[in-house]
Amino acid sequence: MNKLRIGLIGMPFYTARLEKELKGFDPLMQVKSFNTYTSLVGKLHYSITVPSLDVIFSVNGDNRKSRAFSWAKNNHVRLIMNWSGTDVLTCIENFKRGEVDQELVDYAEHTCQCSWIQEELKTIRIKAKIIQFQAYQGAPSSSLPSRVKVLCRISQDRPDFYGMKQLVALAQSHAEIEFTAIGINTYSESLPPNIILKGWVDDMDALFQEHLIALRFPEHDGLSPFVLESLARGLHVLYRFPFDEVIHTPDLESIQRELTVLKEKFKKKELGWNQSGMNLIREEFTERKVFEEFTRYLGV
Image 1 (cartoon, helix red, strand yellow):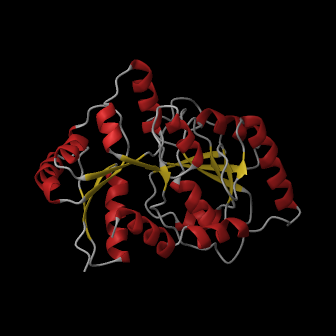
Image 2 (cartoon, helix red, strand yellow):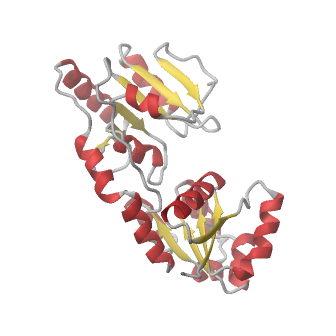
Image 3 (tube, helix red, strand yellow):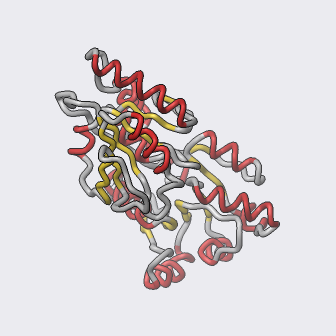
């Protein structure tokens, strides 16, 4: 049995999920997630456990002084920072102000999940390896939706950062299309009647089956789990960033144009599920492929 002891820190939702999935992949794996963000108990448990760990994988990067990262360095524990998205923007500003703990940055290994984040990190002297650690599965409903509906994810905390104003413009231009926004309950301005706010949704199965199109248009993003899951479920994805089997829509004009194309195809009964997107997930993001490569990188 492999004796490697793995600690997971960073964004609690993702570390808890990763721990569960890794243990499902290999029940003998010694892996533990620690909530060092919002739990005093989690922070204490982590600080006590660090010396006994072999590797710490953080679902978030930082280039400033960090107690959680310093504990790893001071105890000579292998430290891997995975850069997710907004953390890169923050650290670019730190770099511009000269507020960088370069010794800690150099001590850590760095990973990310997409090429555009990899290129951004180079501008702040961080070389990152692209590694995936999130697996997806799923298939579309046996029957197509009866009407065109667009599914998107908008953060309640920063709706405009995640594209709410663009969503409003789209809804006004396409009154016959229903836009479903998850992750947000309320908005500060009045909304067109064809925008439906769903709030936080635990079980997404029904929503994926009701939609044929997904939209992701934040100001900045890593490789979005929402995009990958939408591809896995057969949705056609309009995405601000270039990625395989999505429709690259870097601005509002391109979204308007591509949405019109999809809408017309649907009217002519020429728009089915996104088979090439589903194939991508089946080939590159299966549990076996993702976790075999991820654990190999960790040294398991």
